[in-house]
Length: 122
Picture 1 (cartoon, rainbow, N blue to C red):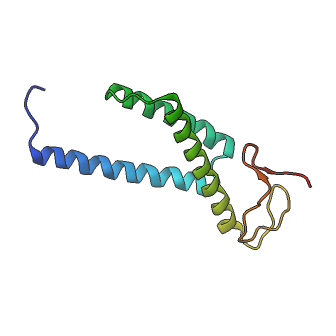
Picture 2 (cartoon, one colour):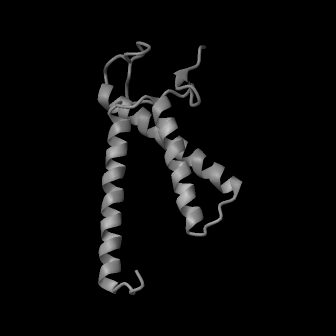
Picture 3 (cartoon, rainbow, N blue to C red):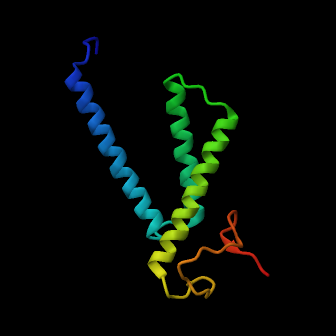
């Protein structure tokens, strides 16, 4: 515990960490894109992992302002909505939506409500 790390050990640890992040990211996105998780489950999961990430940053001595926290959460939520919408289009292109019967094409619904993931009534 008191020995210093060699440059090789640091590089190996960094490479192993990067590989784990890539694998976990791919696994998470697969679950999101495949429809394995509902939008609500994804939102809950994102909240939980955000809280863990904030804790780890605090342990490292990073001080996040509330505004920075909220901005990061908003950006993540927006990105996840885009992933969910794009994956639905790819998986069901030319088909009808199993939930509402809407024809799924290459366009994204302009009047979709991002908070409820439903299309607004006209």
